[in-house]
Structures are given as structure tokens and as C-alpha cells.
Length: 381
Ligand code: FNR
Image 1 (cartoon, rainbow, N blue to C red):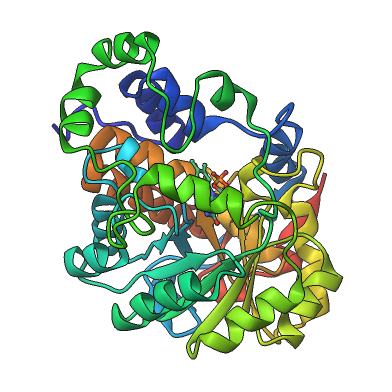
Image 2: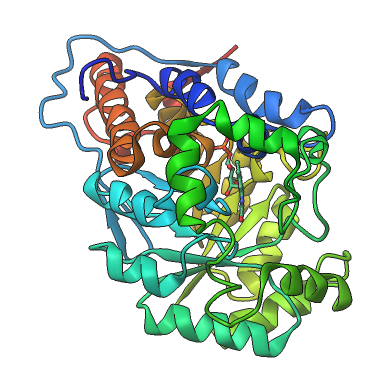
């Protein structure tokens, strides 16, 4: 099966489109409103050129990185994405194992198909856990305690989701929790038998972290979110501070695009910032993450780890982000493309493609260590 494998993330994207039914593709791929920010995340990378220095031996090139106390073979982790069980029947178990095999890690979404415990049992390395700063103390206690017992070294608090973003193609497809299945979905599934046979048989789609383990059904959870106004735009910095105080380990804030917000997060105890616009899925018209990065990195001046996600599809993108002040990157959709096409080995392959691309880029630039990258390696325009 290794023959005929895609050789780039773009190739994995094309192959994933073929494997996945329209409903799942709409969930994975789309941005909010008119997808302006989604496109901007990509185009921002093209506005920077890499400096090429020649005949400077770069033998023994180094691509290893350390985010907090997490050691990685490449400066790339996998961003939290919900319900991976919709993309592949082994869902986050495969994502986590594929990442581990490539010397990386996943951030496990609160909305995962598989629970923190299941992922911890399946994967040889620990994963980070993503939560929202919800006010429901009991729910947060329960989630954080499970993260602690599963040895998650780092908590990621996503702060760019006060309400759900407006992803219209997904809404038009009837994507909701629980999903509303129509005859069109059944037909769609029948046209993608490879996907349907496993995913529908295992039915692990919505029974992960929040439902299942607590005995709460998906429908009941949706009602709880509505009743308790968890997604009604009412969260504030006190909510973050409370979650921070409940967690003893390292804590990152994800979804920062503004230097003042980055400063605030660090002053409230964040150890790291993830510059992110949720892959263009929340505020359409928000800046590209690469454009927001330098101002944030300058302001924090190494007082906290700075990671970035959004639109990273090539090793050169990773290198440009590192030059502009990031300590590392996360990938969201590329991991899902790999997962859809090849399960665990697809995820591993996507990461190893990136590792090879980073290594080759360093060699072509004449740079031997990612730690040496900085703004002097970039040319604007
Ligand atoms: C996401 N993202 C996300 N973020 C988060 O904090 N919790 C979540 O549950 C999810 N779920 C989710 C599902 C899907 C299908 C996507 C594509 C994204 C956002 C994600 O962590 C990350 O910020 C972006 O995906 C990064 O952009 P790229 O790499 O997809 O361009």
C-alpha cells in the first residue's frame, strides 16, 4: 500500500477529498463566512522569501524541538480537532499513534471521539489536552482531573470560541451534534464505502470525552451547552484565570491574535501562547496568523513559548514561522487528510513529509539548525 502514496500535503488533501463523504469534507475543510481568513492564512506565507546562502556546509542538520517540557523530533505538533472518529474509525487513537511514530504529539480536543483515557492507553507518548474555559466547575473539574490522571503534561485553553463560528457549507450539510441523518447522507455514505464500512460500524463518532464516559448522551450534552449558555459569548478573563488555577501543569492559551491579549494571558499564568484563528473557522476577516505572529513574539520577548497554527502545508511554511518568532507550529487539517487516507500511517507520513521538507529547506538555505532561524533569514515581498 506504500506505493502510490501521496508525496505532499497537497496530495493528501486531494486523496482525502475522494475518501470522505461530503458531510465530513465540509466539516474538515471549510472556513467561516466567506473563508477570507482561511485564504489569508495561506497567502501570508507567500509574502516572505527565504534567504539562500550557498556553500555553507549544513551537515548534521537539527530539526528537533522542545515545547515546554515536551521533546519533539520536529517543531510541529498536531492541533486539536474535534470528532476524528468521523474521519477515520480509529479517530484520535490513530492520530495520536501516528504523531508518536513521527516523534511528535497531538493536542487532544475536548470534542474528541475517543476519551483522554483511551488515547493515553493507546499511545506510547503523552498528549496535551485542549479545553474551553467553561464556567461549569463540575464539568471542568472532571475533565481536568482525567487529564491529570492520564499524565497530560500540558493544558491548552482555547479562547477564540465564545460562540460557534458560521461555517455555512457544514450547516447546509446538516452537520450538528448529534448529526441529523437524512437520506442524502445515507446515499453519500454509500458512495464512499471504504469510509462508511468502518466508521458507521464502529459508531465512535460522538462518544468520546464529553459523552460516553460521563453517561451523557450527545443530545443531552447539546442541551446542556444551550441551557448553561456555554457558547453564548459570556466568557471572560476570570474564566481563564479560574481554569488556570485548577491546573498544576503547563498551560497554553490558544486563539490569540493580539499582542495585548498575549500579554494578558501571560500575566494570568499562561506558559505559552498559540497564535491561531482556529484555521479561519471562527472570526472571518481576522488577520492571517503569520501576520499576527511578529507583533506577539516581540511583545512577549521569550517570556512564554509562542506557537502558531493556520495554513501550514510545507516545510518552508514552518521555517518562515520560526524565522518570524515562533518556537513551533501546529497543523490541523493536514493531519486529518493523512488520517482519512491512511489512518495512523497516514498521519505519520504527513509529519515525516514535513520533517523531510524542513530538513531539505535548511540545507538549501545554508542553515544547519532551526534554533539559528530568525528574521535575518527572511526577505519581505
Ligand atoms: C479545528 N480546530 C479546533 N480547535 C480547538 O481548539 N478545538 C477543537 O475542537 C477544534 N476542532 C477543529 C476541527 C476541525 C475539523 C478543524 C479543521 C479545526 C482548530 C485547530 O486546532 C487549528 O487551530 C486549525 O485547524 C489550524 O489550521 P490548519 O492547520 O487546519 O490550517
